[in-house]
Image (cartoon, rainbow, N blue to C red; front, side, top):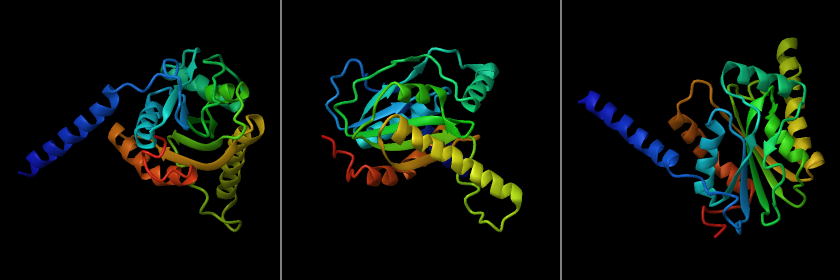
Length: 225
């Protein structure tokens, strides 16, 4: 009996995930974009795309995918991502520029590369202005970016080093939004994805929804209609 219950739960989870993955995200290019909230995302492995799908449905938002024209697949792609992130390099993205004027809220969904926003997102922000936009950063990665926040100045040196290092990288990401792009940064949400299933990533994203809605002053999923 317990075996049948477990199989039933797995089947329901698989069907739920299937509905998210089978339904395409709205095309930014094909839509005249009349909503107030836009999700801008880049996804190397599909995790940021999955997070964006969950957010899109809950926030009733439009979606803009940033495509990296550099091949980032496989082990070499992973290593190249870390290298480009470390040295703050740029890449070629599509689109390079976008009309963001219809939106008052922007949610940027990005993987973390060397504790920073991904290179494609950095490149896009360097070419677009977010003046007057309320911006939420929603990152994902193999690590919990707040892992070392628990340590105070009396903690061992190595823990304080990582705490301050990650704080600096996080500030750099915020500065890209506020300084380089001119946006009004209000919140940073993060989902840890190490060895997480797609269903777990979806559930962790859902747990962050109240934080996102609060930051954007969205009371319900239909607030933008």
